[in-house]
Length: 482
Image 1 (tube, rainbow, N blue to C red):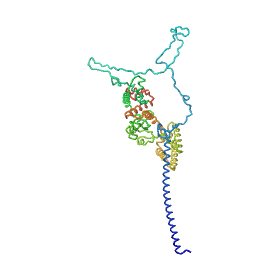
Image 2: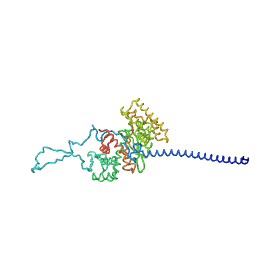
Image 3: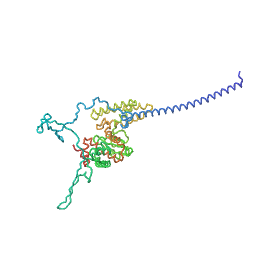
Image 4: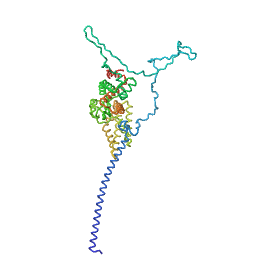
């Protein structure tokens, strides 16, 4: 039997142990809570890093075929074309009307190769008439040379009133010694259109024409070409403002070692490009076409263009298809359904010669809504949240009318490829030259590209047209001639 004293001591010992256990339990609870918080923090960090990894992986897979990146930025692999194989053999197709070199009825020169002596007996055949003449024609370039034309102006005094009269010189003859409009047109064409740098152009002229022209003189000739061409931009500007569809876009360009921008406004017949230091609304306001335009403006989703509310807007589906290809490569099945929808809608519009009947257009709009609604629900449940894909879907929902305008309006195309084609030579020029040393050179280049692109779209001979423009004729005169 325990005594009272022993029982008390035993009880105190048990109480101490219980207190120690309680302290230990409390310590474990605190440590557990700390681990829970740490685990929660690590889970969030892990989710963030996973999203970052996906973003970086997606970035390395981006190229010109699945994003808005230009082809010059393709680094790791050449992207495959998005065009489907046609199944046709290379070369001319059956029924294609080809062209071939044929003899002409009236050649510029005739060279007769005569038979003067018989190779059998040695008799003279000079007086014998040939019973047959074989004809062969050679197409070649004439000897190239720079010609000097002397303009002489008569000055006369009237014998009756002694008034002195003088004949006028042609408008392009302004100095005692100068280069003519055809040579200036050649320099403008080779430098701005064929993109030959000044030094190589100087070497080329000396090799072909045995005439030395310094790079400084070539620069002055290009400036004179600009002065003759620039007034014709007003004609292009007026034509663009009168059009019912206007393609707009922009690309970067290096001027004096700094990034500048070249906006374009164009149609299937006219082109207007101009350099500017900024990319946004200030640039398009300064150029002055978009603020006055009241037709339908075709563009990508760049935020500047919707600010022009007097125009209606249409979105480019070539941009959407590149974005969708990127989402497909990330395993998002809704993107494949939207891609199929866009191609099918394009074919339906083409089958109806440019515009769908109202009921047919409504049916396509309902399909469009269903695809995007399902895509949104699916994306909102994904972890981590695919922000770019979700923003893309919401943009198509919000701008449904602009995205599907091509279904109902025959003048609205499916894409904005016209603007991208008209900007392409700007990037080619940048790849060749790297940078423009002065803004005036960039302006001169854009003026020449605008004029030449317009001439090409009207199927005019660029070389002859440039010569006429540099002699003082207007673009209207040239475009109105058949």
